[in-house]
Image 1 (tube, rainbow, N blue to C red):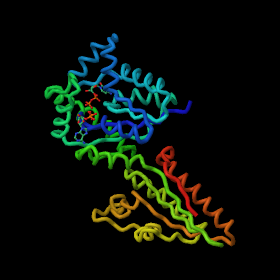
Image 2: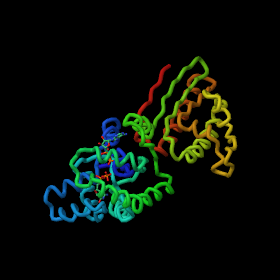
Image 3: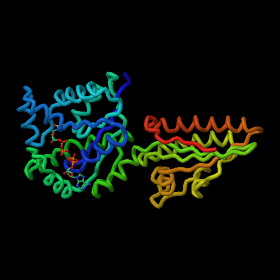
Image 4: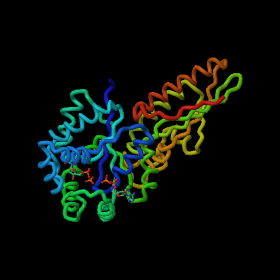
Length: 318
Ligand SMILES: Nc1ncnc2c1ncn2[C@@H]1O[C@H](COP(=O)(O)OP(=O)(O)O)[C@@H](O)[C@H]1O
Ligand SMILES: Nc1ccn([C@H]2C[C@H](O)[C@@H](COP(=O)(O)OP(=O)(O)O)O2)c(=O)n1
């Protein structure tokens, strides 16, 4: 069986993690595991850890990792899933260390990235109080404790993912539909290809959809790819006027200056949705097409760096 690819989902209590996870599950074929739900179910099933779990949850504290990891592993294995969302985990350093020790280093699962739903505390409180799921911890006193635990224990774990370049932040203050619009973009990775040809040349337009986070790494990768492409094709023409400049790999300095901070906003916007257009000219159509194939292979490689499994949209017309 292939190794499960895991996306963690975090954010303050009541931010709407579960709500968005349901949509991700329906649209992108993930299974959704909520660490909190698994713990609550274990408690209700009357397990020997039941009382301990109940006390931790009421006090807004984080249950010891041995219990949580056992439940998570069992759920992933029994679902036989390869794309897994784990909501509400890792909640503290102990959770993260346990996960890496038991799951990652043992080769059982791969961590893809962490999705972070950022939402104002008052809004979270309002949502949690209106949740109506009869939860023992959806009261003001428990909520305050959960927020305190979130700030002291969970935020450092998110910082760790940020420093690894694996944190994808979503503004979760809007309506569920607004938040979904932002969330889905992070999973839409792929490219659309349009091929037009005549006798000797092939006009190839590739539209990439890549996540907005970690754009600088993408830019570096893209730079390498484009340099290579320019060596095998005529210089790429550009579907978007800005792109010409970016293909030339000149960065305008942002107002902030500095080395990384200086990469300008337009480059960042471009990386969200890139439309390079290549005119592939060979001595024959066959030769032009072989160049096209090479570009496509490179495009796949390019996307592998992000979420190759999510390549979801490949079409061609001629
Ligand atoms: N964007 C949103 N705007 C308003 N209410 C929301 C939003 N997202 C979720 N909710 C509601 O807020 C409550 C908490 O959402 P939930 O997904 O359970 O949060 P979490 O899993 O982060 O604790 C639920 O009643 C849900 O219907
Ligand atoms: N990794 C985890 C996840 C949840 N828990 C416990 C402690 C949390 O306050 C409760 C509820 O978590 P859940 O993710 O369902 O809810 P909120 O995001 O806090 O609304 O479960 C835990 O101990 N360890």
